[in-house]
Length: 213
Ligand SMILES: [Mg+2]
Image (cartoon, rainbow, N blue to C red):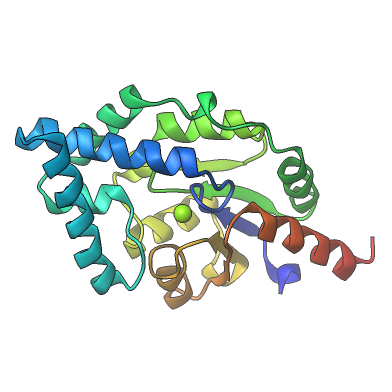
């Protein structure tokens, strides 16, 4: 499959790294954002978000990002992004991943690489820098690029149009099927569901075997 792929898109959070601390930081930042926006106690905000995410999970059949849960409360995305940028810096909590870097550099010999994430540009750059892969990707598409979020098909379509590739020449790698992969698959892209960077290491090893190099 990889031989026909010109461009590989990677989701960021939960795909290029997995971190309990960052997940907790996002959860707390989301609760603080709702507390500020609705002027409710922090405990209530936590509960409201949890309930909303459970409801949305039924619709999307998957855990939804905090962005979508907060949006359901009428919180503007830019407001949420300003709050989480101020609340935590991923560089304080993530370490360089040399294994990931080696794998991506190997894939880069034959494919263009891009990031396609619902995260904002600031947190995305901080995260890529923390992982030591800030210079690896040819393109980085964040929420800020088009003010669009996965699973909106338009986000995928605009990104591939920008890169000048056809859907069937793309592979999307992500950890949430209904958010990252289902829209891409319906547009004709190849998809690969992962549970974290370990699956990217495996993907790279398989590729090396496929190439016989
Ligand atoms: Mg993800």
